[in-house]
Length: 110
Image (tube, rainbow, N blue to C red; front, top):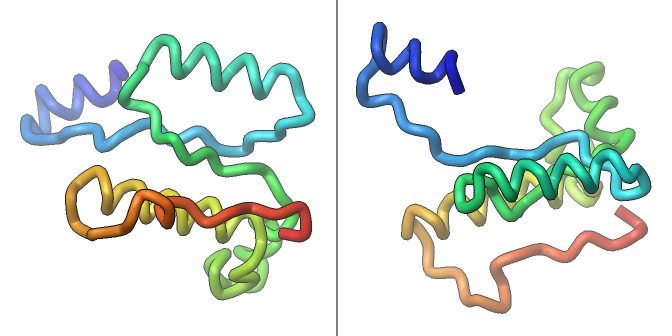
């Protein structure tokens, strides 16, 4: 937050935070769950609902010179990032997605 304040004061007074994105989340780890709760408690509405889960495909994509969606569009990482895109569009009223279609389901197969 200090870095953002410095940039705002010295370089770009118009800089605004769209939100806080939690990444590398592993639901099996108690620490991951504690971090999510702490961040949501402290930053509240600034935290995106979408959380990017840790998975192998996300790590593989850069080594193939591809985005996660090009590498494996059905992986958890792809689905998480697509959900983030939807969330940002919805937040900024840039789409008319029905409530029931706001999130793509992540299955155990992804």
